[in-house]
Amino acid sequence: MVWDNWSQVKDVPFTLQLIPFILSILIFAFSYFIQIWAWYLITLKLKIAVSLPETIKSWFYSQLGKYLPGKVWLLLSRFYFYESKGMSRKGISVALYLEMVAVIVAAALIFLASLIFLNEIELFCPKSQFLWLVLGFILVAFIFLHPWVLQKILNWVLVRLNREPISLSISYLDVLWILFICVVAWLVGGLGFYLFVDSMYPVALQSILFLTGALAISSTLGLIAIFAPSGWG
Image (tube, rainbow, N blue to C red; front, side):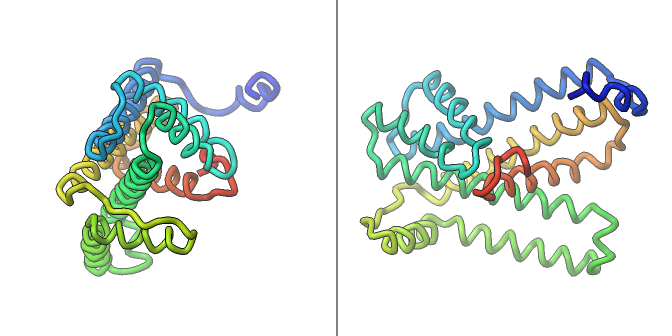
C-alpha cells in the first residue's frame, strides 16, 4: 500500500521516532501477556488450567480468530484446544464467558473514566452530572459482576437454548481481581498505543488517558460486532 501510493505518502508531514516506536510495540505486546494472566487465573479457579506455555500458545492462536467475521473462531479455537486436553465443556464455556465479561467491563470503565478528563464532554452535559453517571455505571458494573448475577444471566440464555443450567464456582473477590488485571492490561496497552501514535505525530501527554479509552472502547466494539473483523473497531 505504501509503495503503490508513495507519491501521496511522501508528502504527508510526519517523522518516525524509532525508539518510541519500538518501545510502543514492546509495551503493547506486554499487555497481551497481562491478558493471558487473567485468562490463566480464570482457568485455575475453574480447575481447567493447562500448563502456562500451553496457555500462552492456545491464547495467541485463538486471537487470530478475532479477525474473521463472526468472532466464533475466537471462542471455538480455544474451546477445541482445552477440550482436546480433557477439560469439561461446561468449564471451558464458563471460563470464556467470564473472560469476555471482564474484558468488556474493564474497557467500558476505562473509556468512561477517560471522558471525565475530556473538556469537550461539557458540550453534552455538565462534568459534575457526567461524573455521577460514571459512578452509577461503576456501581451497576460491580453488581453485574457478582457471580450470582452472572450465573442468573448465563442460565437465562442457556435455558432458552435448551441447555442445562450451570453454577459458577468462583468467588466475587476472584472476579474483581480478574477485572483489575484486565483494567491493567488495557492501561498498559493504552501506554503502548500512545507511544505508537506519538512516535509518528506529536501528541500531548495529557491525551494518554483519552487514547487509552479510545483504544479500549474501539477494540471492544470491534470484538462484539459479530458481522465484522475485530480490527475494524
